Amino acid sequence: MAEELPEPQCLIVADADVLIRNALAEYLRHCGYKVFEAATSDEVVIALEEGALRIDALLADAELPGQYNAFELRIWVRDHYPEVDVVLAGNIDSAAKAAGHLCDEGPHLQRPYDPESVAAHIKRLLAATRRQRL
Image 1 (cartoon, rainbow, N blue to C red):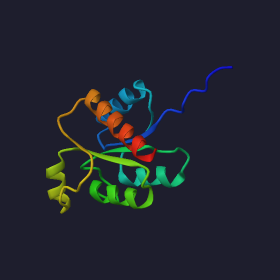
Image 2: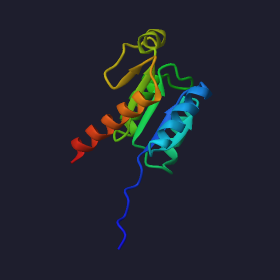
Image 3: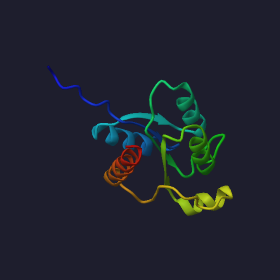
Image 4: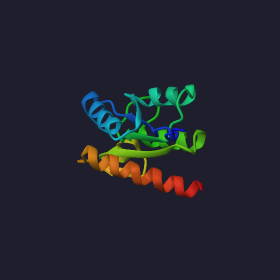
């Protein structure tokens, strides 16, 4: 009898810059993740509310456009989908200042970063979350 393989973890990569979004998404797919891409916070909200995929983590650019800025989006996701880990990426301090928010607690990646460091960060985050849930 064949051993059933675990379902790949699913991520949302949210960035208005199509080149950055596509490059990160493609690299993360290569690492074995299912990846949904979003260009705005509105697209993230729709993807989560539709519930077609079980999302494990959201990687959102700190300057993500849309109804919610990245910091508000992180709070919204925590309130509505606490099982989804949220990582903000980019120029965190500048985005927080522009949004009128303090840089809130939670995982973040400061630019510049490369796809390998993003994948490693997400892998550690999801492994830690998995251990907490056991």
